[in-house]
Image 1 (spheres, rainbow, N blue to C red):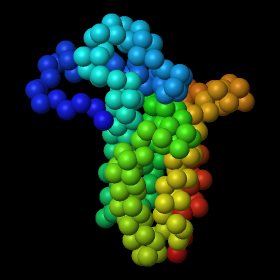
Image 2: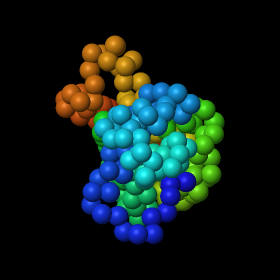
Image 3: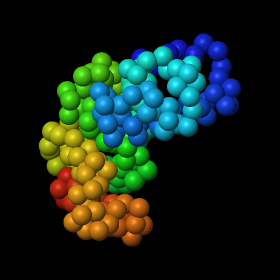
Length: 210
């Protein structure tokens, strides 16, 4: 786990730590945990390895910090799903924000996908504490909407997984999408089209018409 910081960090230290996390995410996403080195990450962050080790004492500590950082951003949108809100509004917002994550954080999405594909070897305890707990909680909100007849009855976890898969594919398989369509989410029109299409397909399948 990332080291505790009993002393308040300066602005420069916070910036340096953020630069290291950005660089580490890029390198780990591209090379995997085993293929990445601290030298490569330090070079990507444009700092010395000694300076990097001031903030993170080992590759594993830095790797776990990138996972935690990714989850902090990724799960924020799910965490804000309001069980007392309108399910169509809440799900539409969630899908939109998840596809934006694929646009703005493609390396983080690929990093997370690679970790899971390798059996969550390094992050199982983190995912159990963070991801599982939050998904269990939000599944209760989805069940509440289903019981009230606002949503079609499906397994809530499966619905969340479907949204994960549908939105993350535009980051994890960006090369495939570029080859087939010649487009990416950086194309504003294409981004808007993807967001609309995902919202329409998912919401039409889950929103009850009664």
